[in-house]
Length: 111
Image (cartoon, rainbow, N blue to C red; front, side, top):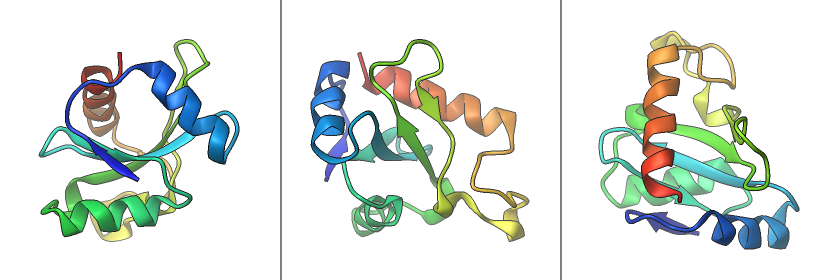
């Protein structure tokens, strides 16, 4: 597991993916701090790491990154995204504005 604050190469994600899941890497994005944690078996582990480092849970969203895919390489799917009290009732990210912010953070951090 690692916290990404500075840009990393997409190829680095590919190497991580091959070691654990084959074609994707799990990530949790912190929308307030504009960073993400990557490379764990569970989104919950990444969420815990970020919480321990000062993130607030309501700013954290789980995604999967498929480094070898084209435009649709970000998948919004994680158990940590289920937040009925915040209006997100699925594993996806239902709010288009939040999805756009997540994409912005990923684009900033992955080259």
